[in-house]
Length: 257
Image 1: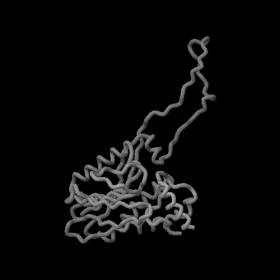
Image 2: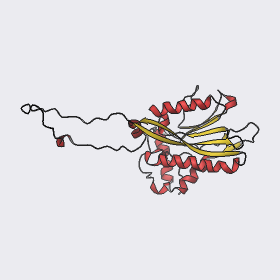
Image 3: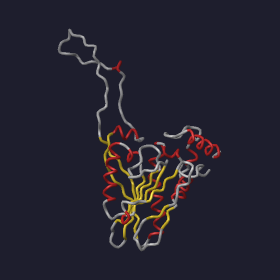
């Protein structure tokens, strides 16, 4: 069964699916670009590594490993003053730790000079909240301050959208920032009921326009990775959603069979 949604499938935003889908999407996008860019450009996938608090990692779906003990099973060690009986029991609390996060992205490099021409980022939940957001915003600003083009793909409804001087509300968005046009950039906003819009990949000014069909890549991954066998469309999709969104979801999910 093909992807039952006309654009982004919101069920893929769930923690059980997102991490794998994100990595597969980055790889699939890179493979789709290679035949259209060689031999002038190299398409390279890489990972940037940063640390966030473990509580933030849990919030974005990373597993929490902990050992818990019921209060009734806690035995008190003998005290120095045996005649004094204490009723105070310790409470198990969590101390903040840092957890390492790896995130894949794409670089389009000039094959002759190895200069990075374009960076393509597919946002994850960690990029839109807390420590991860602050670290990503710093990386983003470094790119915006350079001569490198930036393509930023946000397929997540959760979390606050990355900053723009004139934000436009939408469920999802693709930002194309050409270095020579900054601070002006092209924003492609779209909603749950819309197909993912094709967008031009910024390269050298003398290159022909290359249009990226991200919708086709998402649909191919949905089929190839067998998501239709594992996603329960009878369950609620991840938050947030409005009443209109729910009605749209129900109609598409029922149409999926």
